[in-house]
View 1: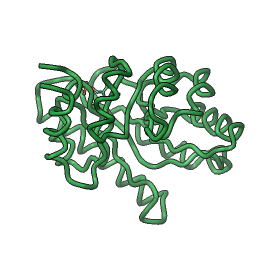
View 2 (view 1 turned 120 degrees about the vertical axis):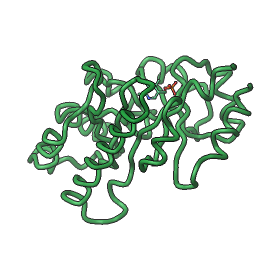
View 3 (view 1 turned 60 degrees about the vertical axis):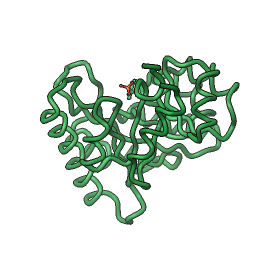
View 4 (view 1 turned 90 degrees about the horizontal axis):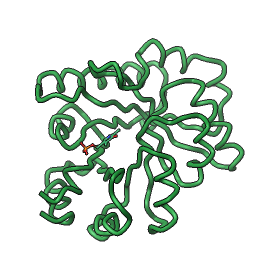
Length: 220
Ligand SMILES: *Cc1c(COP(=O)(O)O)cnc(C)c1O
């Protein structure tokens, strides 16, 4: 299977309102270009170094998504390239993003990452932490970030009942935050969930952004 046919196969299953982010973390620019030629414009990286290496050699109309754990000292480097940061998992990180966006004279879109999986190792906020963040005076004074929704990763398991439960949990968090903190319908609209192994379930549970790597780029 080629990259082009993998993409076609996924796209035909997608409702129109869902955005497909092709995760390119192990993929070189030559191959990324095939996905671009197949029509994709949203690409995701999980390391600042890789984003900075690839973005300048690929077409400028690509929207780069930062999906990995983000260290505060890497924010400045990615700001010029990034379109949406999925992995905002603390107020301190959000403060740095706001500060660096202000320095660069731009506004940056972010998602709040939630810990929904059973694994200890996955980063993310819980609901109370997010409420604390959204209620904080620090957040109230930020003018260079826009929180557009939520992101989460399900447990790496073949148990799709478990995965579905975790996606439902993320949707529930999203709904509660939206009604409590965002007044207009067009704010806080994104739910980034669903990877190669579980994106069909994610679609059923309300995902608006899929992050798919191996199902696009593996040649099997
Ligand atoms: C690697 C990665 C993905 C894509 O995973 P696949 O299983 O290859 O589709 C999605 N989200 C994050 C945060 C990742 O690190």
